[in-house]
Length: 205
Image 1: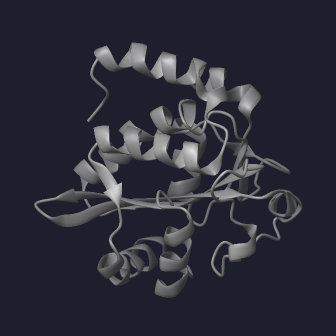
Image 2 (image 1 turned 90 degrees about the vertical axis):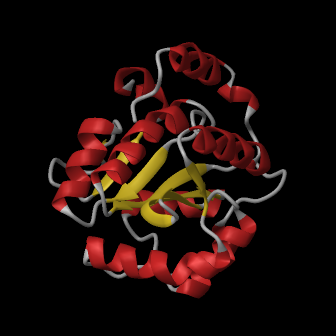
């Protein structure tokens, strides 16, 4: 599931032109385009119950309600992406594009990523202030490999203009975020709040 060598030039071009993907709509379309190349597509409305159960079981942590997943997806169609094998969802990833009022809570660890407030979500022609990696989970090795494969093309491409924050809820998730996706502890070496700064993307790549 690693990108074909021919994709390397495309990823480089996506990084160089990411500054043009400014609005929430433009970033969302870029995400959908990249995700599709790696076998990902938006979660369908009738699948959120399955996705929620899967996330709760694998993360062993509180997760958003079906209603929250659906409401966020309505505003940001690429917020919940899934990978399927033989028609069954085996990997999921969530991304939020957030408005300026979310920056402070994210940086202090006060942001509520479970009961997401719709008023904090960027939409349409708005320019997002920051990104939030909502979560990743996989039930198979192929699904996990698909997440690894698509992660950096998304980050270096359509998401390349935004600083990202995430909350690590498992030790394994924290390790993957730091070693594979370029995150670092935000407030100290043991912090579960992790940040991926735009200026460090070259190093992460």
